[in-house]
Length: 117
Image 1: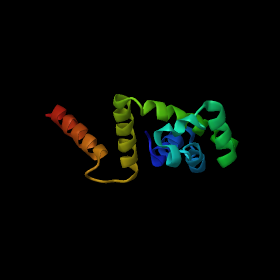
Image 2: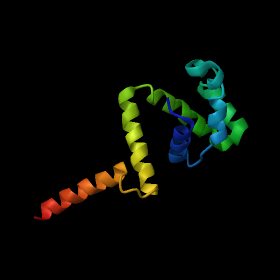
Image 3: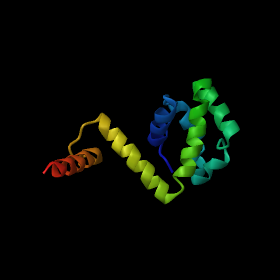
Image 4: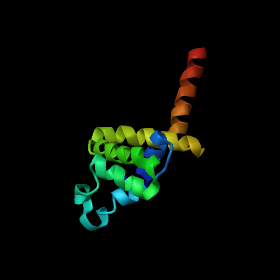
């Protein structure tokens, strides 16, 4: 399942808001119940209410996004796709020559140079 940082990333990506307190509140039962914590605060109505209490009404969308990301990360193939998207997008913010994004750019650059020959 997505970590707190992953929830914050996707929330910020799709809603423009981090809503970190909302994500912590929605997953607050995980320290007690582990993976079974999803029986609490993991339906759209209560998740949105929890987000509104934690961060205000503007974070209700982030709560729904939280639930969607939990469902997406259950599928191993979708998890890989979304993690690659997240890693390549985050790498754009921090220039690292060994990042996946740099490797992709190098490959694209190589292909473009090859076409010119």
